[in-house]
Image (cartoon, rainbow, N blue to C red; front, side, top):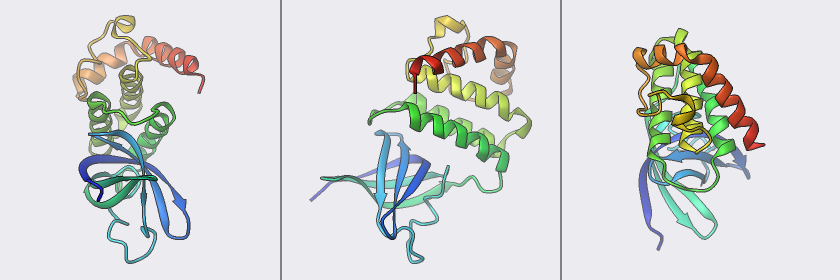
Length: 190
């Protein structure tokens, strides 16, 4: 018998698998980035179908078996409905995370960064979305070790919130932040 794990996750993306299954890229609080298969989730009778929408924040039950992770259940905490511009920005960040994160490893700073960015993009000022995206990408790169705090000499890496005070600070050093992000991304060679 396999152990069932319950954790909070962000649905970063998915792809179809077989006739009615789907494989989800989930960034979980406890395990980092996992790819979990959900059986029959594309059928109309599926209970997980609506919980596992792209960019949703969910409470998910996972089982690690011989062939990898399987989603055994999911309940939505918060979806990204109605926030089109916020969803587009978060989709770009999610794509970057899926590209850069390799393997399963718990990363609380990265998880909180993504949760707070998603929250701001769905419920906050849409006009600040470009600045939130810039700060979020910088924090993702920092969490993965591609940017150091000494290189930028800023306090935006000491927390994961996106308050107006933090976004104003990021706007003041926007050019330096962009330069560091572009350098880090080119050095990843991905």
